[in-house]
Image (cartoon, rainbow, N blue to C red):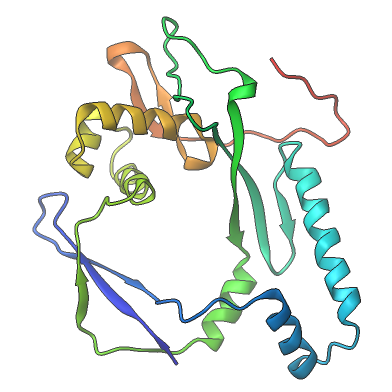
Length: 223
């Protein structure tokens, strides 16, 4: 059985509804060696060295493809995607023609996004049983982190076609400078799901539509 925590969020949209979210507290981190020990004892693994080698080769092969702009899907496990951001100390540039733009040397790999396969989620759902007392354990204000504020934007864009800086300020309760800076950062990251439409005072933020990826054999160029 797994314990869960219920978190209640304030009424953001003025509709009088309290929204609850659920999370599972982390008990510990299982290391790779512990995972291999478990596989030897319970899953019939007979060659530990081969498994370790396969994992390393899988990591290197996935990184080869991600570095060329592709996503990588491992059947029954999930899909990996590269996430890019600006280097430390570099400000995200806007799409305005009258402001300086960052060049390629100012970008860094920020992280790797992972979306689990449905069969993986279904397997976990089948194995997991939850228990809790049904009480709200934590009452908190949403938007404490950038990730939470991004999720608020994505949720809002399911209800309306675009948002403005003013909308973002209303959603997240941050000041105008911070709202503008964070929205620009979201728009600069294709993995955020946010992009822009229009220019200047008419610029709004909308959902991002993903485009295709280049072949690993195709010539690469940096504009």
